[in-house]
Structure formats: structure tokens, C-alpha cells
Image (cartoon, rainbow, N blue to C red; front, side):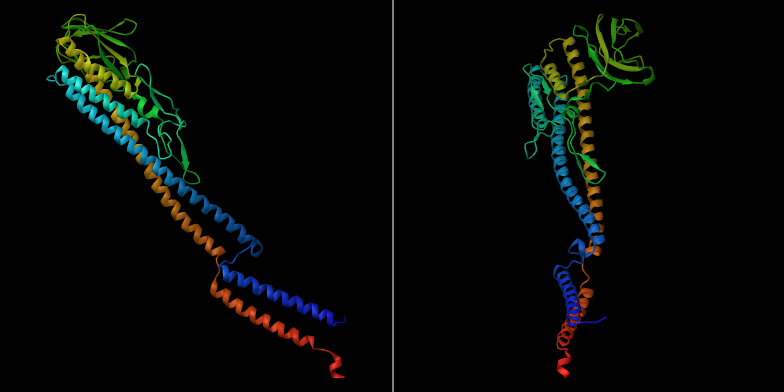
Length: 398
């Protein structure tokens, strides 16, 4: 095969171009500090880098979600803390109002202060975050969750939704609670049944403690305790069927249907007391009933007995509301702890991903600089060889 000058020139130029390209690629790596600057540099590594970058971007978003969730939960915890403080103060005032030495004027003053705390609770239930979104409206975060009707009752306008944020590939955390769950669904009485005294009672019988002693015997129904005389009673269910009878003495516990209830004082013949299954009532309605009870006249022994019995039942409802909010606050604390734990896991995972990404993408400067030196030397040698080859001609030797 005949090798012409054009063939030699083309081969030399191709070799020079390849050497120059290798030098340029290595110089670009050294200037950027990256081994892979384009998918063509290493297609397999480029795909791995894209996957690692995507994972790191997700972790960055999870971190932002965690910060937002912690702020929202912090606002909710602070609001519930204020609500608990108001309820505790209301409980103290209720105990003062239930004192036998408190006068009607004293109880009216106490009722007025309780009403102020009730209004404060309503304001807390309508708390907003820094962006003006209502914390306790469920998904309806733009509308006022609790409003007061014409009759003074409080209505909930939100829904039961609970917003969540993703804080890892498989974990979500709730960042709010429905106002209905927090402020409305409060069990009455002892959580199983609730007591009330007849409005027409004329004796001094006062409702005291109550409890479930045999859950298996309890049948959820409305029972009426009728006093046939100050020393005898009967119990009938909602169908007027006789459930129990017995003799009575003051501060005695009456037992029937798996429960016990104590009545202090001396009921009169014809007095009645009702036992009904516990329902759920919002704390605003409980406070309204408490204020009404404190403001009612209590000029005779029967009225005072009925008032003390009613206040005692409202105290039980307050205790339920307090326990409910304290439990909710504890749940928020558990979510915050979960955020902290997941954030630590995400941070550890991010360090691992960055280490892996560095090993795949970053440049080994020592190796690259040594390679660049060799490539520059090779390019220089190729250029000199090409220059000498250009002068090869038989005519120079004739």
C-alpha cells in the first residue's frame, strides 16, 4: 500500500486533534474540580450523579418541611398551653364559687371572670399563624373556625381535616388538629355516665362522686333515682322498669347497673336524680352552663343543694376538658420529637449521599494534574513530530 504525503498529514492531524482534545478535557476537569462535567464524560456515572442529586434535593425539601412543621406545631402547642392555663384558672374560680361561704354577689363576680376566660378560650380557638391561616379549622384554614350565634352558642365552621407534611420518603407528620377534636369532643361526667338533679327537688340532697364499679353490668341507658321518702329510693330505667330499690342515709353510695353514685345531704320525698350515658359537649357550652349555674338564685337550702351538685358536675366536665387538652398537647410534643428524630436521620443520610456523590463526581486532583502533564508532554511531542514529518521529501536529497 502506498503512503502518500496527504495520508501521513491526515493521520498526524487526527492524532494531534485527539491529543489536544484530551488536554482540553483534563483542563476542564481541573478548572471545575469535577471528574464528570457532561454525560458523555461517563454515562454510567452521570446517571448515578443525577440520582444522588435528586435524593439530596428531596432531603433539602424534607428539611424545609420539618422547619415549617416545627413552627406550626410550636404555635399550636403555645395556643393549647394558654387554653390549659385558662381552664385551670376557671377551675380555681369554680371551686371558690362552690364554697358554702360564697355569697350570691361573690358568685356573680366569679361568673363574670369565668365568662372573660371563656372569651379568651374562644380567641385561642381562632388562633392564626403568621400567614393568617387558622390553626384549628382543619382544611378550611381561611375561614374563622369558631363563631358565636345569636343565642350565644359557639358553632364550629371548620372540618375534620388534618394537614400533613412529608418529612422523609415514607413518613408524614400532622401539622394541625381539628378544632372539633380539641374543643368540642369533650366527654361529660366521668366518661361513662353523667348525673343531674331534678329541677323541682325540694330537699338538700347534693350529687357527689360517682364511678363505674362493674363495667360488664353497665347498660347504657337513662336511669332515674326516685326518692319515695328521705330514707328510701327506687331506680327505674328509661322504660320505667324497676332496676333497684333500697334504704338511704346521707352520704350513702347508691349502687345499681354496675355503677355507684353518692348523694350528700337529705333528699325530700319526690326528689329525683338522673343518670344518663355520657355524651360529648364542647367546652364553651360547659362554661356557659357553669356561668348560668353560678348566677342562679340560691336563697333556700334546696336551691343551694342543687347549685352545689350542678357545680360539682361542671367541675368533672372541666377536669375532662383539661385532661383532653393536656393529652392533645402531649401528642404535639410527640410529633415534635418525631421531627427531631427524622431530621437527625435525614442529616446522616445526606452526609452519606454527599460522600457517595463526591466519590463518583469529584476530581482526584493529584491524578488529574499528573495526567495533564503527561498529555501536554505527549501533545508537544506530537506537534514536533508533525513539524519534522512535514519536511520529509525526496527532492531534498537529489
